[in-house]
Image (tube, rainbow, N blue to C red; front, side, top):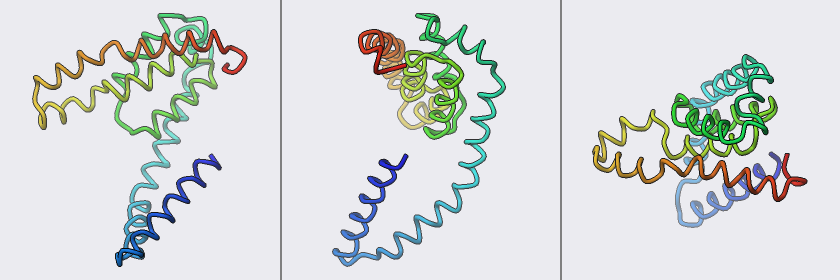
Length: 168
């Protein structure tokens, strides 16, 4: 996490410099950011702990059997379905769940499918999309990306087989 933190920090400093150079209120930007952090931090902390707790509730044997490295197509399809139905919580929670599942024995392929499905087809987004853009677009977009999560999982499995010594 050190390198991403440094990169984000450098980008933040550069953006604050640009705000200041254009005569903007860089102190106001910092203040707004910290206010948002104070609002979001407790929710984020609870969400991360909850995601970690969920992983401890599922026995590693169960994870290995259903979405482990030997689960094949079944694991990829389960990962895809789980990504579609996982409750909202944002990428931080999904990545925390993913990391925990990998530690419990989930295959990279099933987690690639899980994250891809979450980003492309999560059901909790459907009401917003339906309301704001309409059902025709929702159906077209969903049908267009439906196979991408399993495809990404199978591609990840293939790449892991080729580059096995570099990935788990």
